[in-house]
Image 1 (cartoon, one colour):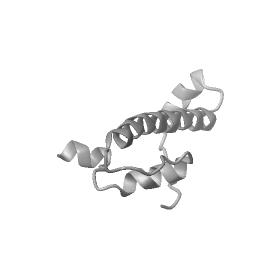
Image 2: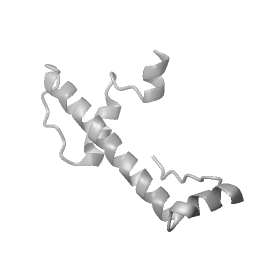
Image 3: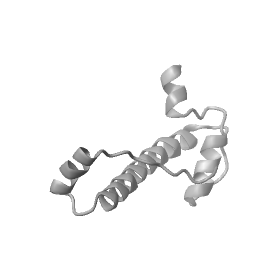
Image 4: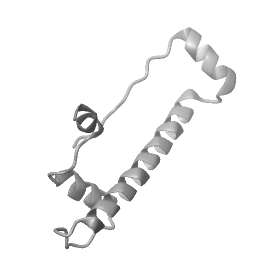
Length: 88
């Protein structure tokens, strides 16, 4: 999967509002995204470690590397993205 670059459009008015509270909009946005990524990782890890441990057909070691863990989970036939879960 390629790196995803996200863009946020902020009007002049919105920028003025944000700068009333923030020292730097981009720094705040980067920190907010980092926090969200970390929380999503924690929830994914907790959910799937439990599922893997309760799956009698899964007898391999659970990867300690984040990238290997995600590759294992997303390759499983029972894995669904949020969009797929909401659609079913």
